[in-house]
Structure formats: structure tokens, C-alpha cells
Amino acid sequence: MTYDVVVVRGGPSGATAAEDLARSGHRVALLDRAGRIKPCGGAIPPRLIRDFHIPDEQIVARITTARMISPTARKVDIPIENGFVGMVDREHFDEFLRSRATTAGAERVTGTYLRLERDEEGTRVLYRDKASGETRALSTRLVIGADGARSNVARHEVPGGERIPYVIAYHEIIEAPGRVGDYDPDRCDVIYDGRISPDFYGWVFPHGGQASVGMGTCDEGADLKAATAALRKASGLAECRTIRREGAPIPLRPLDRWDNGRDVVLAGDAAGVVAPSSGEGIFYAMVGGRVAATAAAACLATGRVRDLRLARSLFMRDHKNVFKILGTMQDAYYRSDERRERFVSLCHDIDVQRLTFEAYMNKELVRARPMAHLKIGIKNLAHLTGLVRPFYT
View 1 (tube, rainbow, N blue to C red):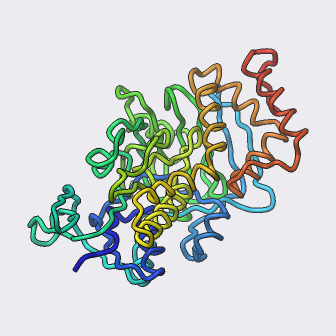
View 2 (cartoon, rainbow, N blue to C red):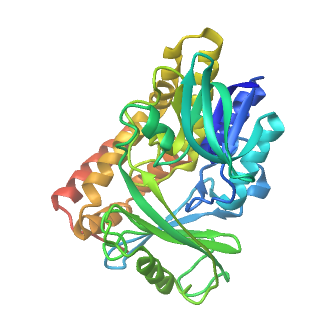
């Protein structure tokens, strides 16, 4: 059998691509390793829930407040007006998406991707079968590489795919006892402190009866487990039972090219689509899977390999400006604790709070209040240049 598309890896991006293609009548194989869970805070915006039809039972918590914590332990609580941030547990959420793709008609194959082979008969995806340990092959017309920030598909097949920058993320899923110490099951805490992460941030995110506590950094010398232990202690969660520990790379910017001009297109972390500054990836991964499926379907229909470029162009059309602004924020504010202090102070501003969460909830820049944008720009410049001192109430 020759598949129309083989999707490599079944995270949110790959599972979404496989489901979309199967629903449109294509023959799809979803190749995935069993048992892998990606470290992730698990936050998803209302737009994701709406656009990708996520049922209520997958939402393990509804967050109504975000707390920003500075290097001097000053706290700014930001209420989430007219909505909530949904939380999912990746162990169950990813499996739900894979099962939904299978129900739509995708064939699930359990194994580890090895490489592609090509000859006059076409393209084959070689993989190591989970049950037998043998090397097997899937014949296909196209391949979607959705295999993470250190994507083997990208490294082997797409120019520049081996040079994607990333941070290392580590977290611990723990039993959460409800309100205890400084922990609130209705609030996400984001910690901007060089002692936790010298160049990114730490987090304490509720997951209903559990919580995700972790951090990310580019610093190879950072002690991720010690930093996470410090976060647990500060929140009053040090004695909670640890359910699992996970670590993985998170990409920092989208690749300049997502296809090989022949038979491969990338999606999700493999294409680098994690938001700078926030590290948010689930929504952008699923959008990446959808546009990769769109590009693959177009290529299959027309026979034009240039249609594979649609994946990147469609994604950037809608999200390039957001990524650019968030990247500028990360470069400006994450470089020192003094800058982090000013960033948390800026988050105290009501205009910043409202526009930030409107943009987060809807995943687009808010253009309805141009004067608010102008004021934020002036305040941002004042904080960066030191014209104002950090303030709190």
C-alpha cells in the first residue's frame, strides 16, 4: 500500500495534520513512538478550544488569573477578563488527538522514525517497529515531519533544519493539594528570576488535581532540577508527591524554510513554531499541523511541489507580526534581572494587561484601540531606558 501522506510523530501538530488529511479522504499513516510525554505547562487559549473543537473533559483547569513574579519577589496579578486560560495534561490531551485522528481514518503505526529512502518506485519512510524491533517501511507520496525541536526529518531533509535554536525545558508533574502556601489552583504563576532561569522563566501551572512546575533556559550549565525544586519550595509544594519528570528542547524561532521542494513539509516544533517570550506552543503547533495538511493536500491535488510552501506562507500571514513582537520583547527584557524587574513592572499597567490577554485569547494583534498601543509603546520605551522606576501596589 502507498499512503498519500505519512505523518511522523503524533503530538498536537502531527495528530492535527493526520486528522485533517484523513477527514478530507486521504490515505494517512501516523507514525508515533509509544509512551512519550512532552514537558509543557499545558496552557491553551479559548481560540484553540473553539477552532479545534476541544471537549470540556480535556480541560483539567480554568485559570482566571496570571501572576508575574519579579527577581525581587514582587508580584503583579493580572485578571483574565471575559474568559479563561484552559489547562490540559499532555499525557491525556495528546492521546485524545491521536485517537481522534484514528477515528477520522488515519492508520496508526507505532515505531521510531529512522530515515527516508527514495528510488524509482517512490519514497519510503523507514522506521523501527515497536513490537518486533525490526526495520520496516511505509511507502508514501508525501511526508509531514512533526517530530519536535530536534527533528530528524528536518535535519535530514530540509535545508537549515539542523540549525534550529532552542531552549531546554524541564518540569515536574506533582499532586496538587488545592490552596496551600503561595499556590492557587486558579492562578498561573510565571517567575522572571535569573536564579531560576538566566534567560527565560519558571512556571507553576495548575492542572486540576495536579500541577506543572518547571523552567526553561538556553544555559547548558543551569541546574534544571535544582531550579524546579526552588520553585516548588517557594510555592509551598515541596512535599507534594512527584508523578513524573520530563525534559525536552523548545524551539526559539520558525525556520526560514519548511519544505524540501520535493516530498517533505514540516509542522509544529519541527518548523520552530513556538512563540518567543511566552514559550507557548500548543496552539501554534496545531495551526502548523493544519497548514501543513493544507499544503500537502494542495500538492497531492495539483502535482506541484511548490504548493508545499503554502504551509509556511499561510502560517506567517497570520502570525508573523505576533512572533516578531514577542521576539523583540524577549530580546529586550530577558537579558538581565534588572530588565526583568522592569518587565514585571510594565505588566502592572492596565493597558498592557488588557491588550496582552485580548491578543492571547484571540491569537491576533488587537487593532481596535490605537491610542492604547501608542501609550504602551511610550511606557515600554520609558521602562527600557530607565526613565521610570519599577513600581507596584
